[in-house]
Length: 391
Length: 154
Image (tube, rainbow over all chains, first blue to last red; front, side, top):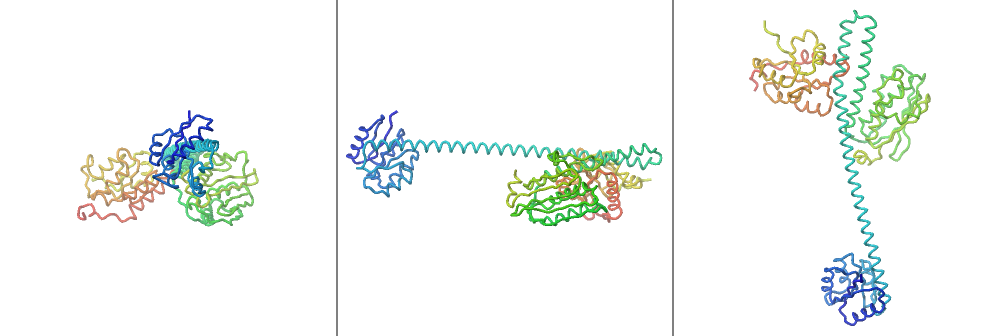
C-alpha cells in the first residue's frame, strides 16, 4: 500500500521542491496530493484515506498555530508534520506541544530528512493509537469486571437476606412447639407429680432440660439471624463504658467466685454501642465460664496500638483451647467443650464475629489448653465504615 | 341464667398455645374468655356480624389478646380494622405473639396496639407474663367507660 501524503501548501515553488525531494529519496511507494488552502485540506481530509499530513502554517485562509489546531481538532489521530518557513522555534515548539508529530524548517530540508520524519511520525502515531486502543480495552475489561463483581455482590446479598429470613422464620416457628412441650410437661408434673414414681419424674425433667436447651439454641439463633438484618449505627463510643455495661449484664454469672478484673486503657472508637455491648457481653461471659475451675480467675480487658487502629483484647487464665481448632471457634453451633462441662449454644462467638465484621474489623484468638485464652479484635479505621458496611 | 360476660377475646390459631394461655390465666377466668382461631372470626365477634350477629357493640370484651400470625385475616389486619372502627376503637388490644421482628412491633404500635408482648419459649416465664397481663388489664387498668360503646361519645 502506498503512503498517502497530503501536502497543504499554497506556494507553488515549495510544492515543487518538496515533491522532488520526496521522489528522489522515496524508498517506498507513495502518492502525494496537494491542497492549497485550509478549507481545501479539511475537505480532502473528510473524504479519508490520508496517512500523513505535511502542513504549512501560512495559508491564504489561515495562519500560525491555529492552522494546526483546526486540522488537529478535526482528526486527532492523523500524524501531522508542520512546515515552518520563518524559522520561529517557538511556533514549532507550540505545535508539537499541542500534538503535532514533528516540524520541518523549509530550506533546511532534504529528501532523506523528510522521509525519516514521515516514517517516524507515522510510527509514533501508530504506537499512540495502539496505546489508546489497549487503554480502551483495559478500561472495558475493568468495567465489565466491576459490573460482574457488582452483580455477584448483589446476588450474594440477596442470598444472604434469604438465608436470614429463612433462619428467622424457622427459629421463630420452632418456638411455639417448644413452649408447648415445656409447658405441658411442667403442667403434667404439677398435675400428677406426687403420683409419679421417681423414674417418671426423672424422664419428665429430662424432657424439660431438652426443651430448655433447645429454647436457648432457638433464641440465640434468632438473635444471630436478627443481627444479619440489622443496620450498624456508629457513633463515637467509649469502650470503657460499654465494658462496664456488659459487666453489669453478666454479673450474675460468677456468684461468689474469686475473679481479679483488670480493665483499662480502652479507647473511644466509632462503633454501634448496642452491638458492641453484645460483643463484650459474650466475650466476658465466655471468660467467666471458662475460668470456672480456676481458684483465682484473672480476666483482663484492654487495648494495644494507636493512631485510630486499636486492637482490643479480652484475656483469661481459664481452660483455653487447642489452637488446632481455632478455625472452628467462630462457626455457628461449633463447640470445643462438652456440654456437661461448659454449657452453651455455640452461637455466641459467631454473633461476636458477625458484629465485628459488620464494623469492618477482624477477630481472632490465641490460646493453649489450660493456659487461658485471649480474644483480639479490631474495628474499621475512622472513615472506613461506609466501605465495610456496603461490602 | 345468662352466659357470663366475655372479658377477654383471645385470637390464637394454636390450640396448645391457647390452652396454655387459659391455664395461665387461671380457672376463674376461663369461663369468661372467648377463644377464636382466625382473624375473620375475631372480626365477626368484635363487629357483631355473621354468626355473632346477635351480639351487641355495647357489650364489648374488656381486652383483646391477638396473635399476629392468624389464618385468613392476620392479627395486624384485625387490629387495623378495629382501631379504625369507632365502635370498637376503645377496646384495649394486647398483641401476644412469638414474633419479635422489629417491623412487627413497630407496625403493631403504629396501628394502635395498647401493648406488645412476646411469648417466651420457657413456660414458667410465659405463665408469669400471661398472669401479669391478666392481672393488669382486668384488675389494675381502669376499664373503658361504657358510653364509649353506647354511641354517646361518637
